[in-house]
Image 1 (cartoon, one colour):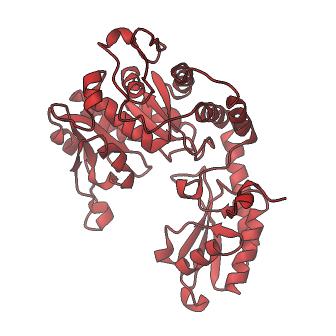
Image 2 (cartoon, one colour):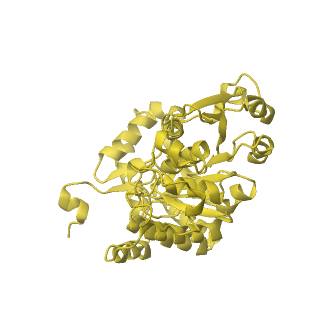
Image 3 (cartoon, one colour):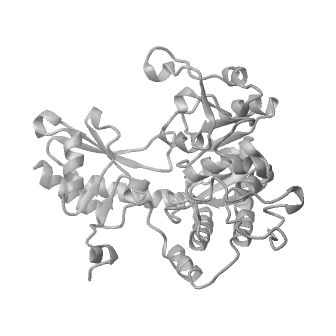
Length: 400
């Protein structure tokens, strides 16, 4: 029987690339989908629901408070806005006009990426520091903590840190120099799960706000994310995100999320208002988060490893290609597979192979990040049982 996508004329794919937004994110556990279905049948006060979700996020992350966002990038926008305005509703109303506010955010040059557009959209100036010689091949150095300290001025609203296993300087060093100047640190940890321990790690290392994706390893709704950190900053986030079309006398937000007594009045709809999160996304994210932290990490690794071993077995003996299991020592929890293509003998490039896989039937999406080296990568996070064998079969058809 055709599934819901097929009834719309849309092709389901085999996703051996990973839970990227472009490929619709992760596959939800049935428990998450059912919790979201149940959530559709009731109405609640969203501020009250966010406050309770924030308490659960705080318990799991070790942060003072938490919030459900419409994705990690939305968390960066909201987190930056909170660092710029604090709890001042007048400033909230003026964004993205940051005249008269602290409106500079510091970032190490090697950590720049497309997603910092979310930070810049608040109206701040992104201040790059350091030279990434280790990436250019001109040397071994990268941005250093003293350079971040040297760049801090009275206009600095925050330091933005993109967390990867290879990021330099270390978060602890960045926090030390930022906090010495009274500047908060906002961390982009969108794809830094697993391990589940990272949910606590960045807060434990002193980050003031940390943004995670909810639709990747957590396997929550694709349009969900987690922002956790200091209570005052999360309160500023909520004030710039929630629907505040309500009379002041009527407005009674949960004190654990927003302390009304600290405000001269409520801001108008804030800069984060377009980043709406529905009750279904909040319930789905919290359900998925609890399942994620409850799962045995070794059981998760073995499940993924089994899928990758099945793919290696299905692709053994391919002409013009060597298929091997790969484990990144920096991310041992997530095994993968590499296909090294003899491009001359195969009569196609690795990019050709990626394109032919995705354009076939079924469409199979593999990782293109190393095609310039003649390597196609495969990951386990969005694969189902039986799909590794289908990938192996299609590779044989293309490389015969």
